[in-house]
Image 1 (spheres, rainbow, N blue to C red):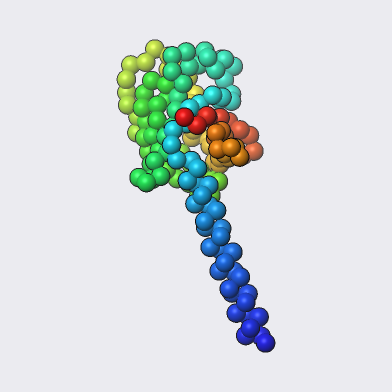
Image 2 (image 1 turned 60 degrees about the vertical axis):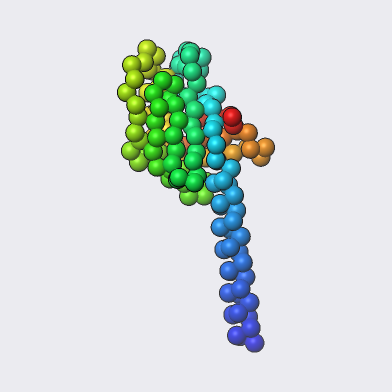
Length: 143
């Protein structure tokens, strides 16, 4: 009887862990693609004032395990660090060095990315929130 209970317990744990892995991979898969910034917390300048010409975007390439995008003027790329809902942009990010007139928005965007520690995606899959602690710092629309 003890062996039967032990066997059933182990079997249940295996099923639960397999299901957790599938759920985690499904959440990460929903990141894949291009997202355009529509909100950023912090600056006292309007969103349109920060990004008068071009909104920043972020592209998740899950096959290559990398992140890239445009910070409004310059392009950036780096390694994708995702574990469940946790995400980090603390690894070095390569960035082009083009001459840009409106660099304030770009510096706000890049410094905000460094602070992000988790993310959430809306139920309809169209909105991505980058979160620091329990505060939404950035919001993106799926493109």
